[in-house]
Image 1 (cartoon, rainbow, N blue to C red):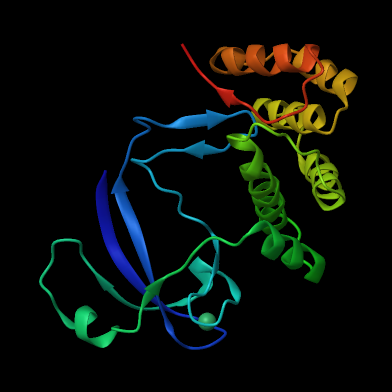
Image 2 (image 1 turned 45 degrees about the vertical axis):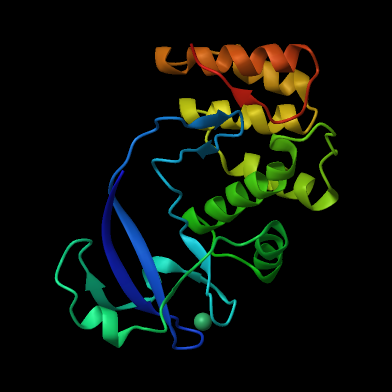
Length: 211
Ligand SMILES: [Zn+2]
């Protein structure tokens, strides 16, 4: 992985500085892939769009926070080092924070889709390596139903994601209806994995091990 520049932004809620560490290039070496579409890649760290300000804990869209400075990874140690000494990296919201954000209302379109997807993933995080699989909570179920309604069945990736959402909701017949359709070749291995889980009435997120 090659780090990119560090971008300094001013939090629109508290005016303090957020350090955004960007990536120049990465790869999926050693990555783990999950049926809900989440990828854990050590060489390609997640770059969340909605972040929690490290100073005031407000949830803000990182690209909408005013950029006030930038330093290159191996550039001269210029003003960035002295001017933004208060800058801290932001973190991704928790399931509870995403839920509160949805309750407060999110702009329809890409932002709603993003928050609903992240809410799904955040809820599943507790199930990824667990032995005990807790069923979806009411909040997770409502979110997953709303998320699946946003997906476009005409698009292969969306149709696959919708089938997975329906499987996790226990709607196995509906999931099979989508999985039995024609998909592009690149998706067939993932389809096979999810279809097997669906046929055995398994509704838990699972790791996908590709050959
Ligand atoms: Zn703030």
